[in-house]
Image 1 (spheres, one colour):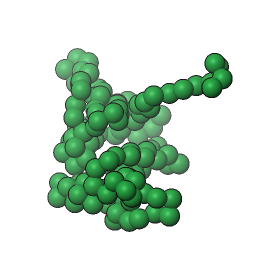
Image 2: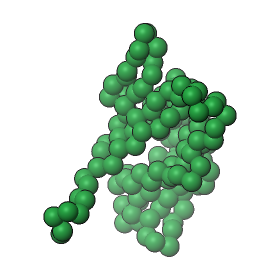
Image 3: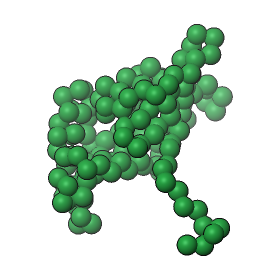
Length: 133
């Protein structure tokens, strides 16, 4: 490996959301993330750090400076890979009020995968190697 090449170990994502309470509930209750920490300013929730295994997502309340109607999540997708059974995860998500964009299916590149969107339209896919389903 080149000494100047990047060798990352984890990627953490920060998302700006329209309604942090709604998004926090969705990531926690629907997807099953846990809250690592909440950041409040003047008694108002502004940010939250969430985890699911090694996956890290921060959600931050939009301040409206760029307009309240700006589209979020376009041209961007998060892929979460797991060694869990994706059919069971998909079923849990639906039981907790989530809606899938696609049901779990085997893909030609060797994974079983399903897709969904968070309340702001950020796209997520959750997959496992076919040998791990």
